[in-house]
Image (cartoon, rainbow, N blue to C red; front, side, top):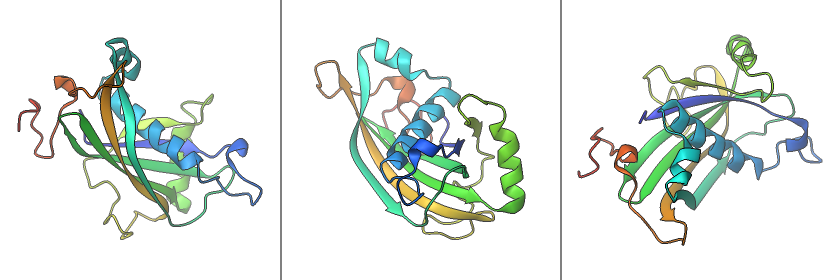
Length: 179
């Protein structure tokens, strides 16, 4: 499983509130999109995972709001795997609005999937945010939101289950899940 992933998100009109800003509840959907696309980029289909009788459910979600996003903004969601072991997965998120030159590149990337306005790409191996988790240098972009989630693995009855071996990964990069 890759440990970092980027997804481009275009803000749709139905996602904004009466103030013209993205409604706060939509950021949770963006985070879910980041998690699912990160799995897909790792060669793992969430749909196939569910067909085994296992589901990944949100145990905890934390969001920090830094700046508003508005209709038609083109944003980059940076998702990083924090922890994956036992029955839990932790993700960290940073949603950034690229500035001028970067915005043109992001717009070009978004044209690759015209129906959804989203595209995916594996990060270039650098740190997740081009800086620290509290702001830092965002590679010429504005931090919109940052967040963290903890996801649990359960079966169809809701009973907690260990993650399948192919999903287990700890921060040292071990793939056997026994560390």
